[in-house]
Image (tube, rainbow, N blue to C red; front, side, top):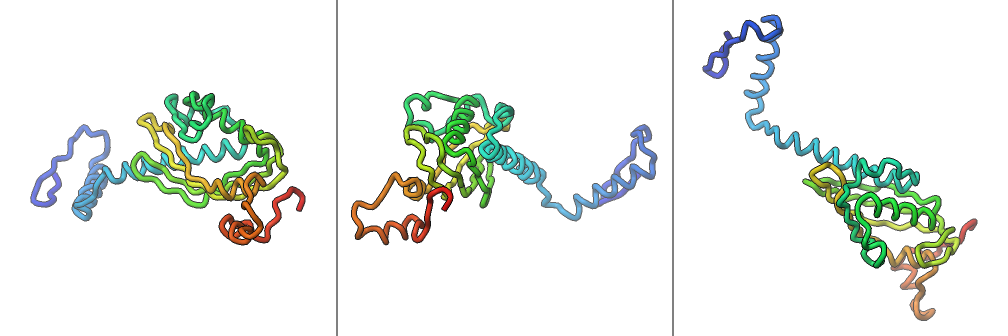
Amino acid sequence: MIKANGKKYAIPSDFGLSSSSFTFAFVGLLLLVVAYPKFDITKVLAQSTEENNINTVRRVADAFNTGNVSNVSKFISPQYFNHESQVDPVRGQLRGPEEFIDTVENLRIAFPNLHHEEQQIIAQGDKVVTILNITGTNTGNFFILPPTGKNISYEAVHIYRIGEDGKIAEHKAIRDDLTFLVQLGVVKPSSAEYEPFFQALTGTMNTTNSTGS
């Protein structure tokens, strides 16, 4: 028999532990409850879930960095919807692992040394937000654009929603597309007088993007 907070607690004789071992464990649990009355197990579980969600999203960067898409179905939901593919009428019909694999393969054709470097990652509820620095050399077709041989380095924010199955169900991105396209040489200022402003805006001032420079 143990007394705590004015209550009596009986120790079952057939619990499977020695009386002294069970008493030690039971007292430890009571002390935890008394010392931390506001202890919220739901918060602990939420933190654990968010950590799992972060680890799931990090598998996306691994796939882009290595080109390995053999295990995509383990972290991409069958209902996966990528907002970024909706600009293409054909790719916009793809869903699930098929869409994700298509994206990885197309981007690694355009940038064989593509690399996603994590700058920051935040999770709350079923959402994970990651800030990446994306680098690579454009030696293959970037969808409809022919290879330029240019190097890229720009930042992007990726937002993921995790489904009830623990897999990624939705993705959207906020990218610095202006800098990206300038680095590829696809976008230029309309006249020379805007060149200094344009370079400052895109962070390409006094930089050279050609391969081997």
